[in-house]
Image (cartoon, rainbow, N blue to C red; front, top):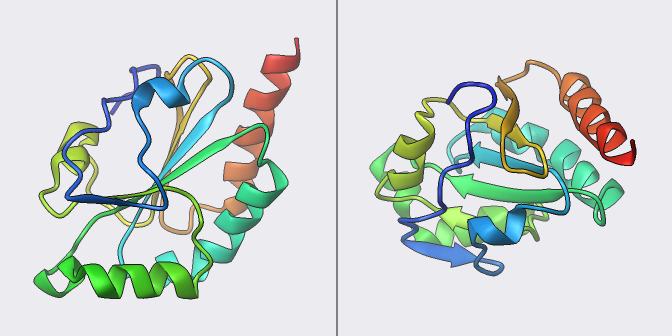
Length: 149
């Protein structure tokens, strides 16, 4: 995806955990982070407390959706996905993308990957791996400040 492109439709999930979300639910009121992760990704697990902190700190001002992107056949075990999500306190909606439909729509190749959309659904920031959770927080705060104007 390129900056300012519109958020793709959230279609193709093999299942949803913690509640299904439609694109329409994410547009209009607040920014959204769509976070790609995988149960086999150690860095994803290491960064989960930071993402959970964002979810809790900005709960009324930010949407967070997780997308589980399998990197191997073992990553397609739904019970294991549920177990890892629970172990890491993931209460946000999780799109399980076993068929890589949403991954392809985003053109995503990495986990973890963070796509930050403004309230109109336009991509405003993208980062991968350990680019810095501080940078992600700065981008979120910038969007929230823009909304106050």
